[in-house]
Image 1 (tube, one colour):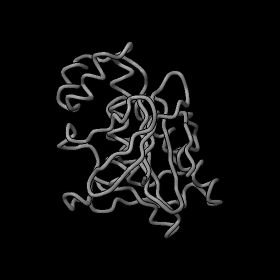
Image 2 (spheres, helix red, strand yellow):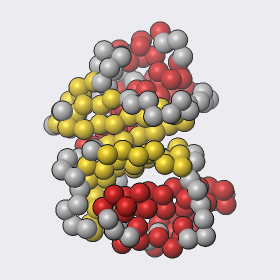
Image 3 (cartoon, one colour):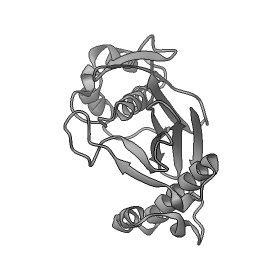
Image 4 (cartoon, helix red, strand yellow):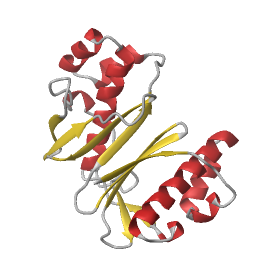
Length: 210
C-alpha cells in the first residue's frame, strides 16, 4: 500500500490529463476557484499514480463498480479499468488538499479532512455517532478533532467496503480503544482503520482488510 498527500497546483497543462467525466464535473462546480482546485487535485492524482505505475497520467482510466449494498454503480468502489488489474485506488479531498491511496492487491479506503470547527457539529454527531463514540467525543479535549477522527474512520471504512457513506452510520463502531487503530466489522468484512498524522492541518484515515 502507498499513500500520497497532494496539493492543488493548477497549471495550463492540468486540463490536458483529465478525462471528459472529470472535465464535466469541474464545469459543474459553481465557483471558478472550486473548479481550479478540483482540476489541480485531479491532475496531481493522475500524475502521481501514473508515475507510480510508469504510465502517462492521461492514459489512466477509472470506473465505479456496482455498490455491494444496493447495486447502483454511481457510488460503488472506484477501480482502475486501465491498466486492467493494476490495483485498487481510493481518493479523498478537502479544500485544496487531497489524499490518494493505492494497493496492488487489496481494497482500501482513505479520507482527509481539514482540521476546523463547523456549525452544527454536535447535532451532526448525534446522527452519525453511536452512544459510545458520542461519549468519547464530549470527553475529548478538542471536540472537533475527536469528531474528525471518528468521521474520517467511518468514511475510510465505507470506501474500502465499497458502499460509501450512507444509512446506518451509528451502527458502524470505529472507536476501538480511542487511541490506536481499530478493528471494525462492517458489511461482512473485517477492516483495520487508523489515523496517520500526515500534516498538522488535516485529519486522515486509512482502512484496509484486517
